Image 1 (cartoon, rainbow, N blue to C red):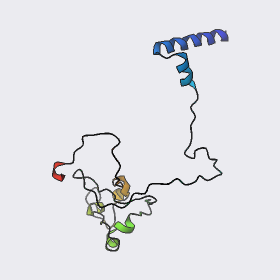
Image 2: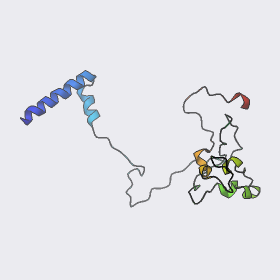
Image 3: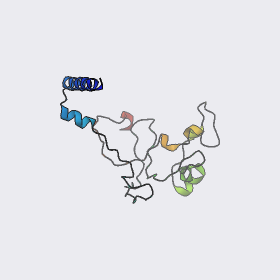
Image 4: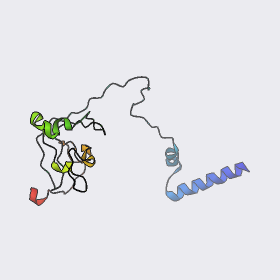
Length: 155
């Protein structure tokens, strides 16, 4: 009985392949197990991987904005910056009391308001995690062509 079921299953599989336009060689390739490789590249967990060179972006001047409410781009690398609920590396330079010394742009007054408009003494929790809105700028070429144009008032 099991041989009959196997034969029937093989016949059904062949019919499905023919109906879908696949030949048996393609089906065998599709059924082959996929080899997955982790980010460690096969290095055992007990060994360290050699560090890979990382392209560091140089500091840029502030970039022009492309639309009116666009958050400013970050004109420097932020690799290794820590932003947790207890510490925000960005505030080492961008906090109001530190901008004279650092030369960095002050955090906008909008970041000190709650959603109800109440002004706070410190950054609002909803604006505390800078990289939710602000991203580092880069000179990378677009991956996909597009017809985007800046807002007319900013051209």
